[in-house]
Image (cartoon, rainbow, N blue to C red; front, side):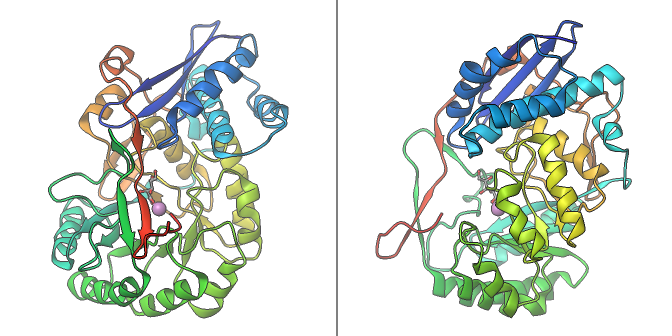
Length: 403
Ligand code: EZ4
Ligand code: CO
């Protein structure tokens, strides 16, 4: 089954998405998400200039071989751009494999390990009261697990908190990156006050999560984890930047608050030490940024040996193609934990009509062959790319903060 065509389509139905479409001689087509938030065109060019010529004429059924051909063949391995490009090819080939077999992709992964995929959504507020309302709203929509972020009083716009009256969207189009400020001490004092209130309000059944966005040093993260223990979070996410992984040992020695990390990891080489030393509880690598379904399944299988469960990143900057892939993955892997889910805009859902469904806090990838996601290219063409950036953070003295 030869590949006869591969094309990259960049569109922006509310936010930017890069999509790879691979077509075979049998007339089957597969989709891969290649979106790298804030650096989209680097991956688009990598694909169209460097990978597409390698794909034409290859056998679409050779998914594992193609993965290694692209990973090892580049010489300069890894890196977010390379691994996102490889992920897009891999997703598209699994989509084609499912369509060729007339089966949903999860059936090619050994079938379902569970009936449905537990997801968590995002709630946020500029004040504790607004955060309470936002959580109540998500709970009414059926979510059983909710990530709570709240601006630290008196400290301006905080990353991860929606602007008043607007959907939370990580990147902003038009202009240069917006600048936020960060101050650790008020945050460390405020976080337990917030979660004490949330537990009083919502009781113990609702699962609460919190994202630290790599903002702390290890000893500070240890203090945060300790102070949040009474409120039984499902996890604290990205407590510290993960280039220096020894820091996780410090955190681990001080707190039983579970730890999740990995949304910016690009391969198993970023994750294996944390997994093997059991320094984390959830690994958050995504299909799109960690080499596709082929590679993410290997990460999950390593994690399974070490009591680590999956908790894949699933913000709106991952397209519905990636979301579908994550659901096929999550339904099938034995050590799935939870999947992040931020609902896409209606415009995005129209461009990418999909078979996956949400009900009562759980999702299912659906039974359509392949990944179960379509792509309306005509509609996509009406939403041209617009440059967008994630915000940057500075300390109060003006120096750049870790992300
Ligand atoms: O900051 O996807 O857990 N979710 C997150 C996201 C990320 C964005 C970055 O592109 O941290 O909001
Ligand atoms: Co995060």
